[in-house]
Length: 465
Image 1 (cartoon, rainbow, N blue to C red):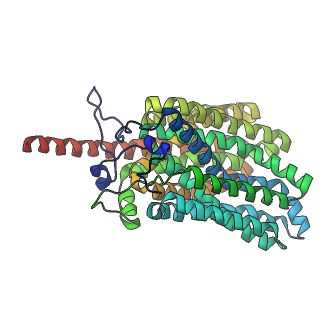
Image 2 (spheres, rainbow, N blue to C red):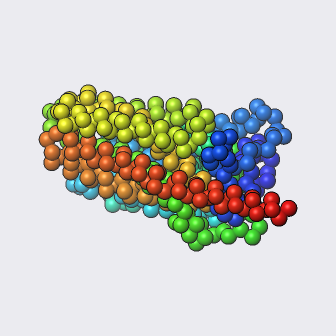
């Protein structure tokens, strides 16, 4: 569908100037006090469609974004309770059954690296439709799998297709929303999706108990098919159209993003912030169950408390991001995150957080701020070069998953080889401080030079007149 179509949603999409397309970043504006404001797109044009129709289209798009973003993680977690049963059923070791999840994660990481650039080249809709069609085929393959290797192959294809929803949901948010609203919209999508994600293992266990493990794939095939129909009916093409003569293409996008300090800063901040989640999740079970002598059920409850704090943080970010802008929200999130990490480290030195209530109570502070930082750093990364939002989102997702897997191993080592949480606390503190360091070191320097260049250009043009 052409971006010029009169779908009600098209009226919410910010216009982009030819200068923006040429330079791959949005022109900065000055605030009343002379400091540089967030670089933003031009405000959307006045809507010619009825306001109610636009609101309905926007709500439908948000529902679609949640569904698209949730297909892969929900598919991952719905099968987790069934893994021991699958190992017994197929007479395989549990480590082989675990490959249905670990190779799923590998597929998620590498697929994002490919699907993002493809969507910048061919459009969001075609890539989404083809990828979700692959998910349906993969689910059907899993239904008829007769061996565990066949099931593992089907799961890998499931991840390849499902990852597209994760990477393109972020890109589409950037396509249709003003830069300062992107962080809030990403937070909203994450918050709603997390509710479904937390319920996924429960639903998977119930489906297995009532109808057998293959019913999980019947349900996911049906949900994915409904999502495909909804995309066909309700989602317009949102990919920005490049200005005439603008440098476009994968190589140009990679060169522009790779040489952009702001992009590197935002992506690295997002990667390090997400690594906090992976690191703590890797070490938490060993500390709570082995070192503190608590039951797996109790650990599950404490683990859920971290997810609850993260979800609440995202919901608060939805309200605050449009008001304060993504850069201020990143700093607010980092301040909260570092405060919680410092507090937990102090408790680690004093031995107070040898109790799960203290350990996870302060970690909830970290996760609340982490939600601000991650969502808005993601928004910043995909806003640096809007016409390459897919490529930026894909690279960010790949780095997040890859580095997260390494940090999960690190967390497991720290939690399993130390009898107190202090080593894990110090690792979380180091990651939190590193988030702030890359934002301080890379993002303001780029924005300042961009502002100076824009000011110089305007001055020379005024002299020319």
